[in-house]
Length: 333
Ligand code: PYC
Image 1 (spheres, rainbow, N blue to C red):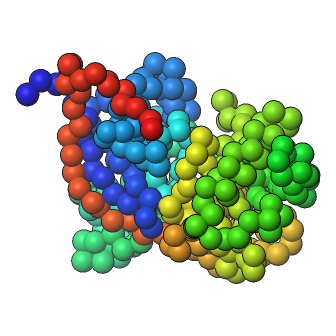
Image 2 (tube, rainbow, N blue to C red):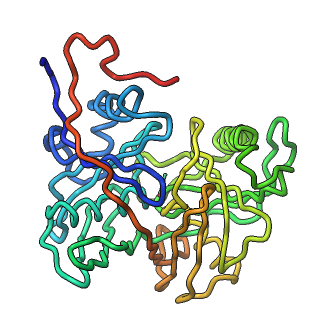
């Protein structure tokens, strides 16, 4: 057996969405902050992401997280998020997966009934409060980064769809919120292809004419997620289909998308602080969110969200690269 690279992984899923947690083999990524490490990884180490996320080791909706020593002294681990489509500054389902893996494998000291893990992410400090029963990680509540509405109730001209009403909010990534009714499509997985192509057209139109730009996070000046809201959704229970660039759906209810949606509902005056908000994915799995308080981010009024969900370990693996492998970075199909 020959291998020019060996990467150690604990695989998991969070409410249906995979997180491949890389526990060893990458080494320490250069950078003075976690976001600098993310940008360095994109510029110089992207072949590792492609190897782990693309076929044949991954698939078009694959997602993962690389564990790092933290840079902040008040954190237990650093995290760089990887996906089939790139490196997000923050990923909610991925962080719930990371916290579950850290507890289930004993990579952090585990205390019951709660184990608190402080994570240094490219978007900032995220605190994972893990509910532990009999050594088992039962659920994880994240205190996510400050979230805000970037624009509310605007309209964008989209080829093939006409004028589409939308809003944009940030919850760790930027999300365009669009009512499915406004693009004439039903909340039905049988129409997943049509909903996805509408989402990609909306992303293209926004990124071409008026991309959002984060006021403090470098390298975040695009919109790669469209949260299509199902009819009948409100500030207590919302169902959605999360279309993601370049062409896949979040299987989980999307942690950062849940926080963005809560920020939008707060701005509308529909979601008060301290009230549970249930967000349901396209496959019917759920996260519960809540707003703890308010703050500001680079001039925007912002909220401090939490999101609670569950994850399960699905396996452990060593991913290798045979120097004779004709697809050293895998492929997309
Ligand atoms: O849970 O934040 C999330 C997420 C982002 C993309 C896929 N999942």
